[in-house]
Length: 206
Image 1: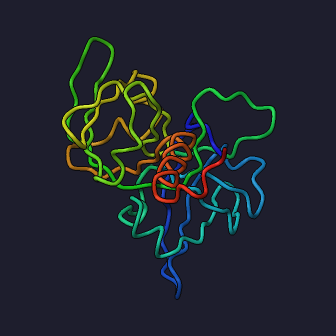
Image 2 (image 1 turned 180 degrees about the vertical axis):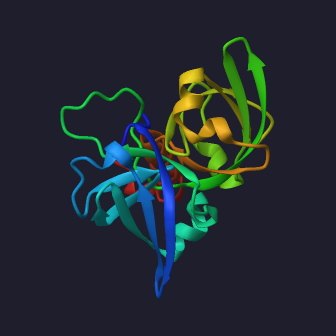
């Protein structure tokens, strides 16, 4: 479980093709401190397990499904990734609950400057649209953000402060770039409950 408060950026060091996916080596710097084999790390929005550690570098074993359904499949050595280590019991929850399970790939469209803020516009897959609520939470590349405005179907805006732009990969996006999207965890459960209530009324709780 994660909060969407990115701790820093890592750098892709190497990609190694294997029979079932890839080995992805990432330089984490100080963020490698305290990590152990099997630990979960949110890497640009995708929850990955540490399979090997070499100093401050870690290796993830990435499945074909993850490579196909997230932005990780298109990254090359030298690419930056947002990094957040898993939430510990007792930690402050400053963002919102993120599972690191990417729900879909969105597209960065453009940016409008409003004083110190940068208002980014994104387009979502049709399947992701029901997860969005005005002033609700959304995960973009592992960053916890608030939906500032819902636009025509399948587009929305978020307002980013300079700290977020400098601390995460969002500041380097260019129009047309794909981004990992994750809907609000609690909202997804509510939506699923309502869908089941309509489809299978006999299972409703009294």
